Image (tube, rainbow, N blue to C red; front, side, top):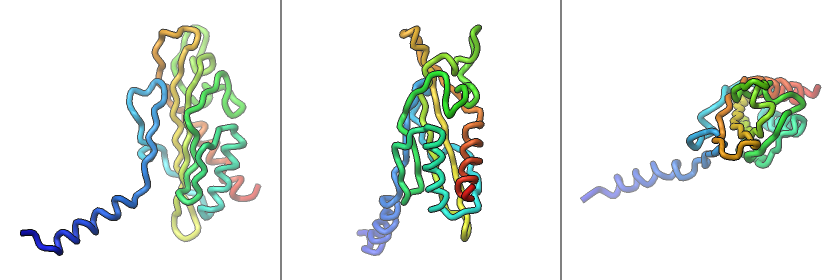
Length: 174
């Protein structure tokens, strides 16, 4: 017979697991599997408190014309559902931000329909700072050739850097 204290210990150990946030999992055309987004992205430190950084992050998504479908201030999360663009994103050619391969007419990212999702999380860092982690995922589809499979795109890192720079400027009040 198991002791009641072991049973109580098992219940207490399981309680924090049930209280954890749910993980964001997305499927983007061109990716063969589901992607768990909180395992991706590089963390960057920002010298401002999380509430200020979160407000700046929402404004930056708007400035870059990236839909912010989820704005979770308690979880420090801003994310878009999968959306598509063709030709440009945030005022520049998509190939500035994504590599989807090239053909004889140039980068596929600039001529194919590109499905993408962007997510950013803000977490406290130290007494008055924050950490931001941004994830940008995409896949391209040649809509002129309906039978062709979507292809994966890889980020160049430029959108994440631009987002981070704009975020710091906004948070600083510039």
